[in-house]
Length: 470
Image 1: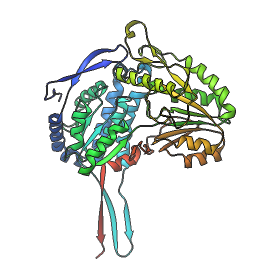
Image 2 (image 1 turned 45 degrees about the vertical axis):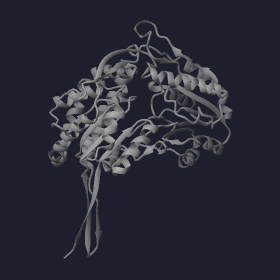
Image 3 (image 1 turned 90 degrees about the horizontal axis):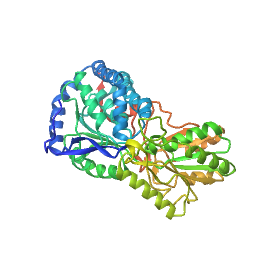
């Protein structure tokens, strides 16, 4: 059921395209987390004992209900986040549907292992749900990443306390209504809205919440780890990225150029997988720079309700942060080849938070701009001569989430894939996802893996049973 916050306080919710408040959300705190936990704890026994096929049926019903209301969800996601409606319609909401459907199927194939000790004993491994788990998701892909955590946690038999970003709460609220309509048993999924330093913090330190799955900034992930680790909670942290896009001269040029426009500026560059550092082989650099700048300048930024390439960035604070990072780049000696400024959009969006897609050249690989995550429509371009040189550039950052390599040379592709420090390597493509594969990063980009059976392992505890032959 839908209940107000204990504090009776609310938080303003903004439409990034207009810069105006359009709703309010609960300002929940530790008292609300305690209520959610109590409900989840009560529901755990019956939910965890429910046959796998029955849990899968609930997830399938939720998927169908979201799909049936796709247009409503897409419009809500666009208004809440600033992204174009077409993008939410094509990518965000269908992926949320796919998350529920995928894990509804995956849990039915998730089996135990057995090991024979011939003539002596047999061992088998039970995979049992943890109990009450916590899921905290970010604002850039609100429903997409919220369901990416919730669906496997529920499929595995856990009950969930979940907190969406306070910046983009609307589709999580719509999901709660869908779950009620679909008859999901009470207490199985408990969505709590509010700030990270209140509700999120209470989840991290709650002694009864067995695991935290978090996607967001590295700094926040560090805080969660420091608070949750002493309580011996399981942790899955999908954090920031400063991803290299490495382009060799033998790349399929047209395919590479079109994809690089996407991997640089999709969702206003607010995807942790965007290739924000573009390294181009020297012999191709001049041609690429000219074509890339031209294509970037032709991108249309504007009202997310219209057919535009880029919408608004998520908040005024984030817009100012992006603009500040661009100023820092110029101060470091960078040359702006395209963009670099706030855009004033006419009509209803005249006070909205829009930033031009920006290309910066002339910076060293180890400068602040090339080391810190910007998380906006900003990329740097830089030439390189050899594989060894570009590997040094690519691996120089503290992050290691994803990478993209463009080459027709299969030997080179495999060499690079082996040596690059990233959890995901795309070769001649970007953001091509198979939900069965492990997802996550190395170094400061996170701990653990999501996706496929990896996340089902995270949300379960293995128990070995050894039976000695008589």
